[in-house]
Every structure is written in structure tokens, then in C-alpha cells.
Amino acid sequence: MFSYSAAARVLARRTFAPSIIGVRTFASLEAYEDFGKNVFTGKVADEYLQKHGLSGDVLNDPTWVKNHADGVANAVFDWAIDNGANVFCHWFQPMASSGVRHGQTGQVHNIMLEFDKSMEVKKDFKGKALIKGETDGSSYPNGGLRGTHQAGGYLAIDTSSPITLRGDTIFIPSVFVSYYGASLDEKTPLLRANNALNAEGSRLFEKLGLDVSSGIRTNIGLEQEMFLVPREAYYNRPDLQLTGRTVIGKNAPRGQELCDHYMAPLSSATPALSCMQEIQDECWRMGIPLKTRHREVAPNQFEFAPLFGTNTTQIDQNLWVMQIIEEVAPKHGLAALLQEKPFNDINGSGKHNNWSIATNSGVNILNPEQLLDATGNDVAFPVIMAAIVAALDEHGDLMRMAISSPGNDFRLGACEAPPAIISTYL
Image 1: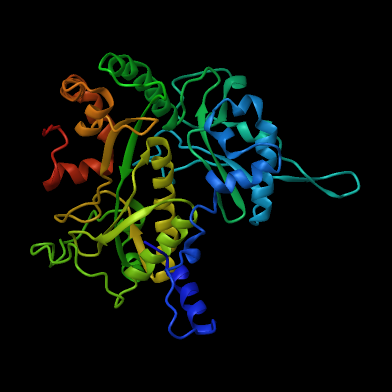
Image 2: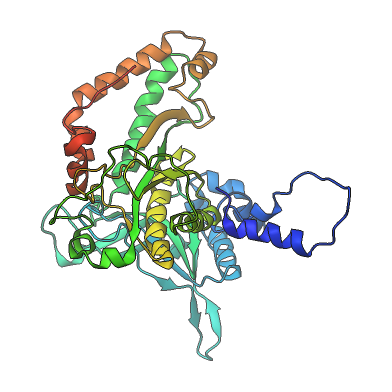
């Protein structure tokens, strides 16, 4: 997944560096050290936090929003300015953003600078501005009528997902709630579910002999399939432009009968490969580990797959991946189709969610060997799996509602996977 720009830098060094005959050294990864340079975490955050008397470890404890907000804000400001950014926004996921609303995220941009009376530029970014905000919440689904003074939407930083930089703006992952705390976004219910799983799961796992003092989390790996089609052809289809899918006309004369597109070589004869390389390059700098790229089953269908991570971070990163795909494709004369079922009678695009439970110390609870080593209890895995199967059986209607969206039902209701059937294989 290493980027073409990184490869170009390596080639340039080889071309212009003085040659030494007969000397062989280990390969250098220096050209790829910009991984994660645009995300405020790890060594990137540590470098700037140390200048303000803190360390990168402070971000591992969510209470920094109470105890060190100003220090972190100062470090974030320095990092942003050094990387050409002077704007910040609280970046949230409005309710009904998937499948209905055009645009997957909500954001209001604010400059991080101000002028004093003598027109000298000054910093205008304190801890309070970093950790919370307020905007108009009246136009989002909000659960009913309320007074005008209660129409605001309230933003608070999500400390489980890192701050990201792109262009001249830093994006602060946030939750979005109403005056009375009702969620106006897709992330707040997820964080509440994480807390419930940690509390109730810990009770069970502890009785099975597992050390849960570090806490419980869920990991996911969100694959992203998409179609890349010639942009001039896309402009000839108003239905594709307005709905993301074809709604009129005949089926394509050739489909996926022989599955000859699946896993086929990514050829430089079309712009698809260079488009995917540029997508990976930008994601690389944003700390998004797109590990795999390949052709999918349907003609002109492709897929990226990342390394797994915590669910909140993976969802945020997948939103970025989709936005970057849509923005990079036109540079290569392509249109990216992310709708779940753009074409009739050929496979749609899935976002497979590879889900697991783990302790924060790294024990994969759905890995029988790891769980046995951690607990010494050979009935722990069967008990946990029985609980998961029982939950799927009892709450299948909730699962169905979570899966359902206008686009996804077109895809799943066809030939790929009936959405009313949820099966478990052991």
C-alpha cells in the first residue's frame, strides 16, 4: 500500500545520490515515515505536547479534557500552524447521515486566529474551544418540539478517536447532542453501547477468569467497495448523478458471468490503479492503514481493506476514506460510486464489518487460543459464543434495523444476502 509519491522519492534518491559500487545495505523505510503525520496521536502528538510540559500518554486518559485541555489545545495549535492549518472544526456524524443525507459528516469551520486593536494577529484557540462547541441543532431529527432557546446542538470531543488534519483545517471528532442530551448523531449511541459492553461484558469475563482491569473494547475492520467509472459516461446518466444508482434503462449487455474481473491484475492501462494509489497515499499520511487493494467481482468494481482497529476510530477513518475516494477520482477522469447497488443484476458494494471483542491490554476474546491462555478456562470461549448467538437471536429485529437503509436493501434484497436472514456459523 506504499504510496506512489513515496516510491518517487526513493527513485529520486537513487537517481541523484552518488553511487557506491559493491556496497549493499539494508532497505530504508525513510521515504514512508510520513505515515500518520496528519493525525494528532503517537509520536506526532508527543513531540508537540512535550513543548507544553505534557507527553503523548496524556491522551490515553480521557480526563485530560478536565485537567489538561489548555495544554493540549496549545500543542494542537502549534501542530496545525506548522502544517499549514489555521482552521478548526468539530467534526460530527449527523443522524440519518447514511443512505439519506447527502454528505456523511457535519462541520462548521472556525479560524484559530484573531486580531487585537492594533490589528496584530493573535492565537484564538483555547482548551474550551477544543473540547466543546455549540451550533444549530433545529434542522436535525430531534425527537419532538422544544422551546426556541433549546434548539441548539451541543458538541463535545470524542477522546477515543484522534484529531485529524487535512488541508488548512483540523477536524476534531465529536458527539452531537440536544439541549437535554438526546443524541442528534450516529456516534453518541455507539459510545453508549461501548460503555454498556464494557460494563456488562466485564462482569461475565471476570467470572470466567479473564483480567478485565484494562477495560473491554470492540474492534472492527471496515472494508470499502466502490465502482470507478469513466466520468464522461457518468455525466450522461442523470440518475447516477442524482441518486447514485441507475433507475432506468436496460441492463448492461455484459455483467459478471465469468467473474473475470475478480482479483484480476490492476492494470496501468486504465486510470483506476493510479487513482487507488493516490487514495492510499493521502490515507497513509492521515494514519489510515489501507492494507489491501484489489479488483472486485463486478466490472469496474474495486475494494480497499484496512487493518482492524477500535470501532470509533475505524468508523471515523472510513468516513474519510469515502470522502477521499470521491474527491480523488475526478482527478483521474473517473467518478466513484459508493451507493450500495448502483447497477441492476450485478453485485453491489458492501462495507463488510469484521467485528471482534478484546481487552484494552490486547487479548482477543473471540480467539479461542488467546482466551484459553489468558483465562486457563476451557469453557470460557463456548460460554461467550453462546451469549453472542443468543443476543443475535433475541435482538435480530434490532440488527435488521441497524443494517437497513434504502441503498443497502437494494443490494441485500437481490442476489447477495437476504437481509431478513441473519445466520451464525461456528
